[in-house]
Length: 351
Image (cartoon, rainbow, N blue to C red; front, side, top):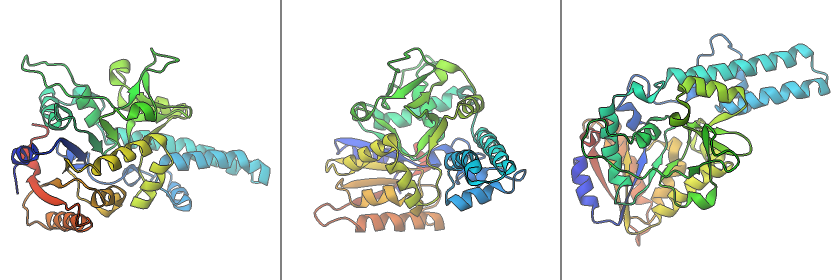
């Protein structure tokens, strides 16, 4: 295994250095809450044991789909002679699902950026600068928590040391109709071409308002995550994140959302560049993200650096190595892929 610095030094031979972030990025900061699994798997349905059956019937783990289906069903029930009590029960369960979603988000995330020490943010920015600094790379994150966003926005320099400037363009800007709003909006596909940060599976600060995609900003609201989410969901604005379980389900949601699909297309375009390299940090290469991984296997960039946590010979790391070799084996002879592995801990992402 290389050290992270060895991998960075070796990657200097390429024109750009891109990064794909997995859940290990967040686990390294708070292993007690950022464990693997979807919000659905973490949710407490004990008070409403019938609700998991709603997800099962709809074939999804997406809260938004379940909530909207219950509300639609309640509206249609009178037309088809369904009892008023059934319609009322659907609305009650819809409201309960909204509250469960908010509480699950809150239970698995720090409330505000101040809950995380400045030193940790500064260490994280130093790590991110390898990709968002002069190298002119891009970051593609598969996480929907707020840690990356908070680190990007943590531009103050409380220690009086040399600042760590990084590019933070994520394709969002002021709403033309309401530039002073508490949120910014996605500027569409044209502006997205200059974006350097892509939330491939959405994020908890991105809310679908129907007519546009809004990004709620801490600096404009100073509102706790739980309160922000509760207010938005109460207005039928749902956080945009891909919580489905399988790769096929994730791919389907991505293709049906302009923002998610644009980020995916940016990834696809970059893996086809023959003079760049990619890092994958904190991801197990599990098959539920095959919609991303297969694009790497079909790409043209020549070198991939993958983080491993712990001993290289551990069972989990052997599986990662095998999956990485499988990606390399997918390549055409004209575009071979060399894979190197580095020690995740040596990156000191959070100090």
